[in-house]
Image (cartoon, rainbow, N blue to C red; front, side):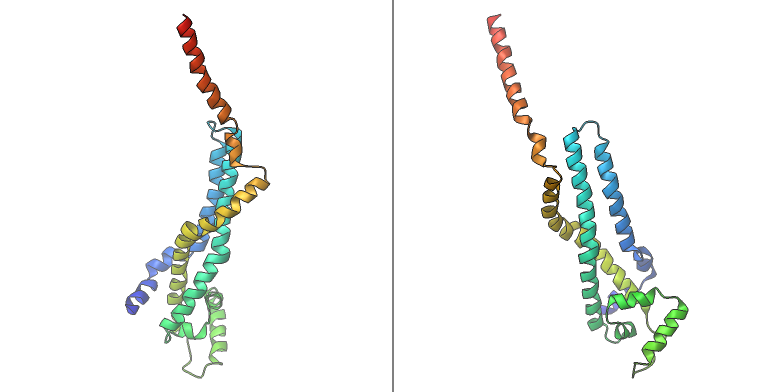
Length: 208
């Protein structure tokens, strides 16, 4: 089971697909935060108050979800996943020398010269066999980190973020003077007029 998991997260296909997961999610959400409100504002069949309320709510929702995803969901998931991997794969050099995903990602983004210098520095502190770039298996740790990003995007944006964001959005809308109830203020009067009109019409027909 463990070997199957390791084989999956080290596959080039997974790595190529997910190497910029957070960037893709951020870009997509920002586009939604701009595009959806613009579409609402451009709809000629919606009254002005509804446009303001709906477009502002959509913008706040998208940006709040993105903020929760980047600031809370991803850091927690990455920290937990890396800690779990260190326990499951104790013999993997990459999990021996890096204590958390942050330290690993700093190493991963280095060029070959910087990586060699970093490994030389690490080897000075090790009492066991020296670790080389070929032995460190950085693709495994990178694949695991990006797999966490996929899980985080699903659980964070689809489940956790909406639950947290909704209680925050409505107070902000009220502060801005945008209240959903205002859209319905004229409806009772309109309904009353519509109710009275048929009665008036029926009386006229009776007299005739």
